[in-house]
Length: 589
Ligand code: NOJ
Image (cartoon, rainbow, N blue to C red):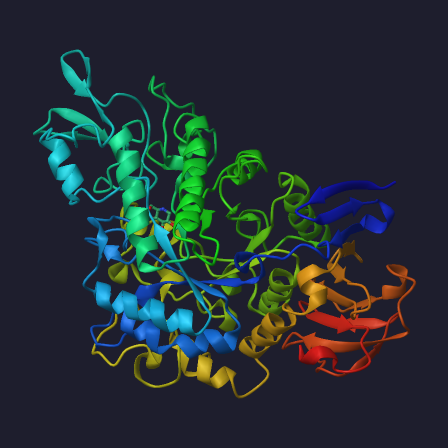
């Protein structure tokens, strides 16, 4: 049985022999765009490199590391928010969209950063926060005072009076578990909506001036030369106007003030939100056209939404919205218990459910979640990178995951993330995001080479003496695997080739990529805790008897160049391999 769909020149057909999927890859006439072939690397600027000894990463420090990205094979960096901010949510609370926060540097530093990265052929994407500002933003201060045109810039509502007492307009809750999403403002005598912190009031997208002013801020940064945006918390942009209460979620283990105790059907993914993303896409396209920009201006959106609603952020071929919404399936659906069939579903479901003509992406981690090495298994880091970098689609890497860095334990007295602070010492470990935001370990010198200051903003991972970037250049390491993969990813087979997916056994997942007379590659990962032996001839009987190890995970016991019998490939627990049919070292990839 064969089923086929066309996807951006990618012809994908599925048939049900041994759980295989076959895709025919890109048409030879299709030229993939920069954001499709690139690895996008998320830089948590605060933790990347401190140039002035204040213990906080900054733009000058980041610029000094341009070569690191070049050598890594990264095509674009996405900077976590760098705009002026009181930093209560580390930059996601913006008090001025057109200024750089002093702790990160100045506009001049930013312009220099852009020049240097562009010179190195690396695109720069900004993290833009459209849903809310800081309450210290001039817009909010003026809105409180009802100064035109800011009066309706935020979501203001009258209280409900019951038995002579004032109550919020409804039961909506704030994400950071601090209770109601409404805060009373004494001066204006109204409640304002804040889906995140009290100090992060939600903008009102039903006010046309807000829509215009946000566009103006986008063009301010486009004018400086940025290549695109990551839109934060996009699914929160609109709420139901009739303010209906949200129903209980019924999820166990949540308290009544916890965000997850409600089902957010009235505050997330409202129909107007998709239109807004489309408007931004059109705006960026128009901008690029008018200014005759040589490269596409790119949009990716963040939304932790149900699958069908997430897919709608792609828009349609005739009315595209984002280039892609983040694919958070490796974060939300894949865990310690997952077997080869689960992994196959994670891969297949995204590709199958994308609207026609759209492009996949693979995210393993970010600043809001535990790191892959801790969330999954340090031993799976190489295998997961093989999947992420060698499947068709854009790879999005969180800083220092290329080193397989683990979360850093942060004590209660050191905790600074409000998501942790809000729930108190008993529960902070479940909610705090500090552990995944620790400074980048460059080497084994003081403060892991991150800063020469006397203190740093978050504890350094104590394993830095051993697990650091410099050390990983000296032996078989996650970093070396990552670099090999980033290089191989550029070969015609991976840029254009087809895709077959296999579950070889309950615990061994694999896929292959082929393109005309270029070598065929197999990626195989053993998720289980036992040794496994795989017969690849069962999956593809046209294979040569011998395959060569192209890349191997550090724990595999194999090295590049080993020759293996296709029908007898033994794999240690939690190991992964990239095998090739090539007999020579083709194309230098
Ligand atoms: C999503 C961001 O990723 C997260 O870090 C932030 O706290 C919220 N949006 C609020 O802006």
